[in-house]
Image 1: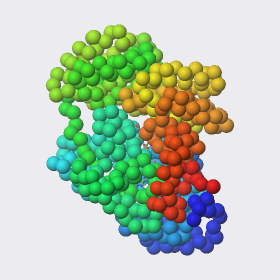
Image 2: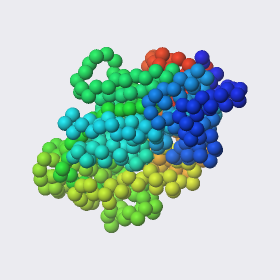
Image 3: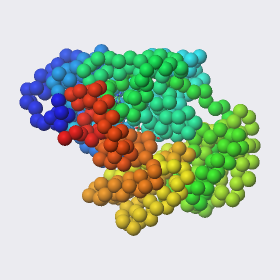
Image 4: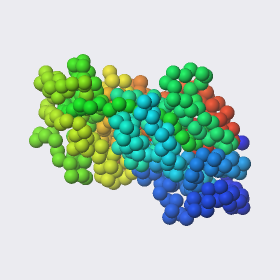
Length: 470
Ligand SMILES: Cc1cc2nc3c(=O)[nH]c(=O)nc-3n(C[C@H](O)[C@H](O)[C@H](O)COP(=O)(O)OP(=O)(O)OC[C@H]3O[C@@H](n4cnc5c(N)ncnc54)[C@H](O)[C@@H]3O)c2cc1C
């Protein structure tokens, strides 16, 4: 079936029969159809994407997920998998006539293995809960992001999330060992091995990382855990520009310290955070930019860091150092997303991009000039995990009618600097019209072949990630 036909009107009786069948599988209490109840599932975190659904289905285990998908497959009804609904590109927002399959009830932590350093858990377990379970064994979960109280393990795998620790431990794909997932026709696929060395065939967990709900519904994950650094220090330094921040980060590394996290913020961003939270400005005099770098070393971290800072007067305007976890300093960074949303008069255009480190300074400069020239009413706030080349470009007060042109302008600038239009949030609905700026025709055709072989009826998240075939 061509995916397009999925969105064509169906007989109301077909939907009614399907809903009865789904209630038989998961229980009537877990089939939500009341518009008030489903609103939290059909509207995204940013308020930019408002979808629709015939129902939200909340299966409680893998067999139920399998039976739900089989029923939707037979009825030809599209399914949008959804975890914590913290995604920022509209990938978990269903279109009219679809079913939302919420994984939040798949919330069992099956085991934490302190010797193998792994966690086995349901896709609906939140990142914060996984981290808490790991902490009980002196370990940590390797992915950390400001949405961790709601973002789920299935969601971070499906988006291949990055986050603040990516510079240290890699992205989500780098942490997956095993996966259980249900395919569109309801069959259950399990690649479940704790082996870090296992080269038998294609990397299926790796393929599902970043698949954004278009290939399968992830039901369980087996992920690596990390040994936390014991002696961490956090520096917040005022710098003139991103190049100075990159040089500082480099000096920190060359001194033998391990970089645990490296973030960049602008003075405008810090001002917003101070206006919307009880955070205080870090220094008496503002700097154009601020970098927050968390470091560790086996011993004398503080002394080593202070030495680097005293040798870096040429790069730093002001600096403050606190022992980890330094929550107050981190709040300045972690409150950005919420403060930005609260401050914009229109839904924020959020573009998560990456560029090579060597051109990051040039990119930021031309971005600012272009925006000031073509969109003078738009307020740009930039921040991000800059040591990974990642900048979150937030465009505030942008009239919805200019959002497409604005996005197009930024993405073309990114492409001209050999960057990526999606560093860590995925493509979702928001970026699929621009996928050809990030991938060649042959590459897109190969991805479409994978999609059609895994999901031949095109029921899983049609229109997300890959443009729909006409
Ligand atoms: C304040 C804030 C800070 C953030 N910081 C970061 C950050 O630092 N780094 C980062 O990478 N992201 C960040 N994000 C974005 C978001 O938290 C991540 O994309 C996260 O991985 C989404 O997880 P979720 O469970 O909420 O997924 P959802 O939003 O529910 O879904 C996201 C996508 O994954 C699919 N999906 C979800 N669960 C499954 C499943 N079980 N099987 C198959 N497909 C599934 C959905 O269909 C959708 O396409 C942030 C978001 C917010 C609101």
